[in-house]
Amino acid sequence: MIERQVHFDVHPERSSDFEEFFKNEYRPAMARSAGFISVDLLVNPGEPGHYQMAIRFTDQLSSDAWRASDDHKRLAPRLKEMYSSSQVMLYEVTV
Image 1 (cartoon, helix red, strand yellow):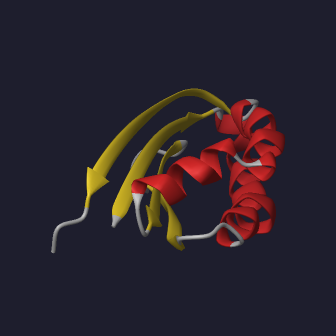
Image 2 (image 1 turned 120 degrees about the vertical axis):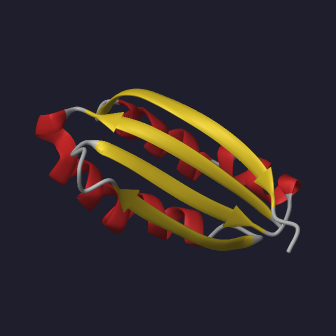
């Protein structure tokens, strides 16, 4: 299993837009992908605008397929409008 963790620094005035976009568009599109297991959006309550997206797929190929999908290509530009920076960490879940 693969877990991709993406940290986002969301523009303060866009936090509610970011959460709504994730809930109503991004998560549902990702959930339709082969090999999808789960995605959660975490927010640091002490640091508004700091979000972590924890994404799990069965394997690297499925994760890569999501990133190459038409849905991801369509949604990514809209997502990028809402944050100033992001950082991606990729993990293999072993236990």
